[in-house]
Length: 599
Image 1 (cartoon, helix red, strand yellow):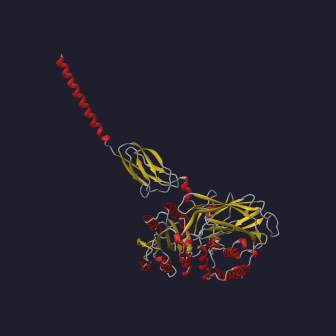
Image 2 (cartoon, rainbow, N blue to C red):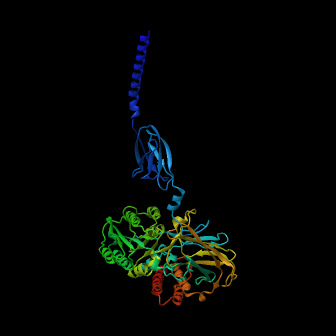
Image 3 (tube, rainbow, N blue to C red):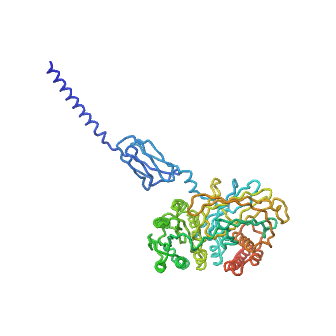
């Protein structure tokens, strides 16, 4: 009996092991089975997203989406979860079944959406603005601008504008007039014409970054209105104690630059700039044209002959992959980054990018990410016929920098030598000003210049974008206002405030936002008693409005503009003397056009 029980137990154990082995053989294929998860990642507009991080949560393996947004992942499980993430987008965790195709859409983060949208340069809350027709000129491109209208101060007392010392429009306008041509209205940014001259500079107090002054006077082209001048002055940096510079020259050496007013002009311009470098400064050169390469490795400013020789050897050929070249220059600037220094890419080009990233929107997105490295961007434009003003303006504004147009060697000397610190040494970033007008004193107001792009105006939720101000810059903003009551050209009740002004900014290499307040008095004086530089600023504003063919100055003759310019200009200033000649040229061109139209 005991023997039978022992035999039974052995048989039972044997059968149990046999069944276990059979089950392992049955289940083994399932345990080692490989499933293949396939799908694609797109954004809200159903456009493919590449380089999206994809984590298979069962084993924490990392994968990326391909160029078309597609992905394929091997998995041991039929059911799993995937985590999708990409900078600027909301991360997403999705339960999946491996035998089903996945269509994943990521949503833009609100903060990133704001960065990538076109920004306003001036804004009046809840105000709708009108538009105008597009102007074409050869193969050049300009943003379509919407001129600021008169605003009811009681209904819309609050207005603001960005402070950015770009000066490209003046020399570009001069280029058209010197070619005996009318100027595309969208090429005329009146505030850049005014600030080209750095008028009425007043040094801030020793410990202050800015000084604000204002003056109210009569309007020379409309006796019923007045002009309010706002003068914002940035402190001057001590040249003997400024931080070391890390400059990356990004020079367009593509085939389109093979013209006397393009690459040869840029070569001469950069050679002038090199003369002012110090031993503590570093220069690198990146070129693009057919290929992108580091033309000159980081070199001390003390080695001027080496840098100049390297510039002189540049030649033009090949396509223009400007977008990829900009990224290369930023990477080099980051590699040689000087903490607390002036780290800046200086892009010199006609803006005609024909390979890679070519649209203003794509450049906007790219440079918005690149500038987070702390590297600034200065744009120097050259050329005619295929000049892309819109691209360079986009890059400069998004890159925390400034933008100048070089039409000749004299302008190059002005920008790169005489105004070196204004151009290349920033004292404040993200600078913008807000005004709260007193409707008891101001019935209507209109900001002259600072006109917005049409696509920005069409979106009323867009925020105001601050600008960059360099050392020793003076910015003049001029408002044309209608007094709240008939004053007969006299001041509106003495010391009463015309407006309350607040200015916000960040110091260079600092993320802390600072605020400056100013009470704007109704300190009226007649135009004839006004400071000569402010009179001259009014003449430049009139010039901008005339060349722009603005409806706000239609009844004003060129002779009136000439009289004000002649009575207020400084004969010792080459720039102001040159302006008088420019007015005379413009008068002949536009009067001839008017006569031709009437005939």
